[in-house]
Length: 349
Image 1 (spheres, helix red, strand yellow):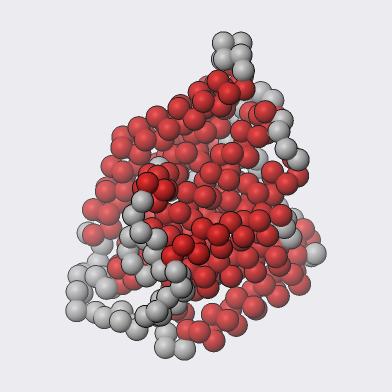
Image 2 (tube, one colour):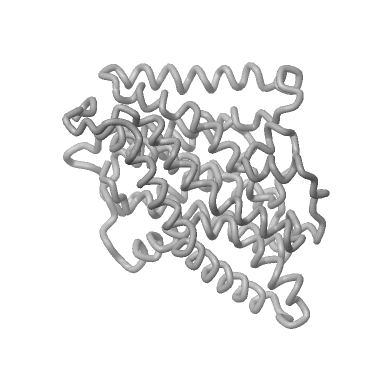
């Protein structure tokens, strides 16, 4: 897989737009709530597939340059994930922002334990709510970071194919088997993280599978992505179906050629670049435009336009003022860890 993938940009853009549009529909009370909720959930699931695929490439780069690649990986992920989430949590507490603007102005009682669990992104372990509702997915990513280096070692082996097949099928079967007993085994832990393991494994498979010399036409990527969204989105609360949707999408990614540069792919790249900021800030924008300025912006189109503008400005500004500097700082700190070993070859290269 190429380091810069147009197809992955399209995937990530579609993922964040599913969440953004869902919350717009919630605020305007448009469409069937259950289906809208499922589509938004599948948008987050697509994020998980994308994240795993991209992080496999990141680890491949790290392992080629340092024996301390695991420590460097975690340093970089901390500086990538936490700065913006910390700012978002502190801003929500300072402003008293609602947890779910589409359900009213309420928020959970702010306590020291709740604040620190959200700052550390362990609120699911602490069995507490997210101060901002969209934060629910970040603890899942944090937990997956524990196992992704092990998954990376698996896909670097020569017999990675059957190992990943066993791991994917075995984890799916195990999750189904223990899900009914999860509340007993883990009474203080929301075990929804387990449900997404096959999604992250699908992303790793997508990374490892090499494209054939004569790959499928690139114009198939968007239709197949939409088909995956239609099926996986409709059954986003039924794990076996959205697992299968993720796996099919991963296999398709490894066979379909890269989309050529066009206004569409440029727009997707822009959205993908600022997607983390879009994901975390759009809830604030909805609150401002639909509730705080609701008497000024008297129509839904004006409120939607205002939400879009505020989200765009906030996400772009935060990326350049906070995200990108912290990413660069994380890379610099990670580069100081461990001896360099540029001669190390990655498996399968």
